[in-house]
Length: 433
Image (cartoon, rainbow, N blue to C red; front, side, top):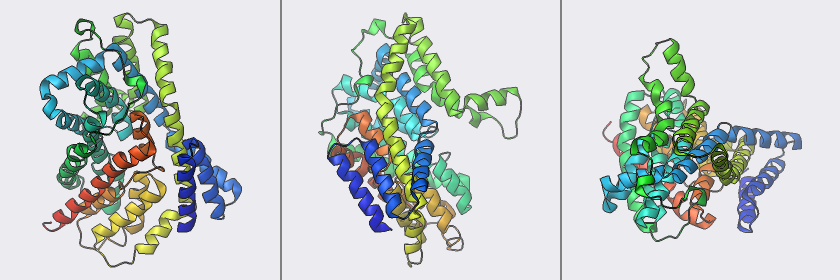
């Protein structure tokens, strides 16, 4: 089993290194893995198709509409206006901390991909204006987004694990926040200092020529358009439990990712486009340019999903967990190792975390360890060393326009720092709980 996956991953990496398109490389590696594992050819194709569909889903809307909103924010000067406000409030010295704080605030309610595409134009605008490295400013922001998405409810993995392990939601959030803070600092501002000299050129679709101050949109409109998706997505939090009615129905409807992004896109097109004199033809041109800029990202993420699904079909996650489930070690370390192993093999952090909890929850039910810490240790392990089989790897790589090597030295190391520091935080908390 492991030899098959190792061979498939080696083939995948080898194809990418010789400049084969990553999407094609994923499809070839998926076919090889499935066929070598003995799956019927028709089942391999079905698994690939399922992986392609499941990995994209609403991401087509999230990334596509998010890219268009980002393009409009950049071209209209809204991102420039927001960046000026951040500069004025934080100053150059504290910009990494400011970007980290923004990442935390936006990352708590939003999925990683949504928050990333919303904040990318602001980040690149600030970096361009200050002549600071986009990575130096971006790493703290991305670290915050990754930690909040990976460790804290209401995100998918921690939410699912709270139920599976029987943990208390409030204590999971409290312990998770304690673990998250040092993890963000280490993987963000501290790590950023070591790679600030790495040269990168972010995607051109988010770069716009400087606009005169008197021609910029107002700060209120700029912030509103940038954060409208966030506002729409978090509105259900303010609806009292059990409250039914037309208002709650509308709020829940507009909070769906598709509707939130669509409403936000229409608002940005009107407030930052039509109302400022842009013709419909010009706005549609921005739409086409932005979508074309993320088309390959979508394909690569779909390819990573196909490879992950084939790995699941051949039973890799079960094989790994059974191999080490009987080892006599700390339950926190055990869950972390299993989740990390599955993450390395199949790419998806959510899959790694939920698969680990599903396999080990019964074994660990009477372990005496806080279920809240089991949630966090599992989630931390699921974040380790994101590489070429993870959609997040390619999202980061393509937006920052980096090579595979550069992405491994930045994004992959960042994720590993989060995973290790998260485990360390859990082990320390376990001494006092």
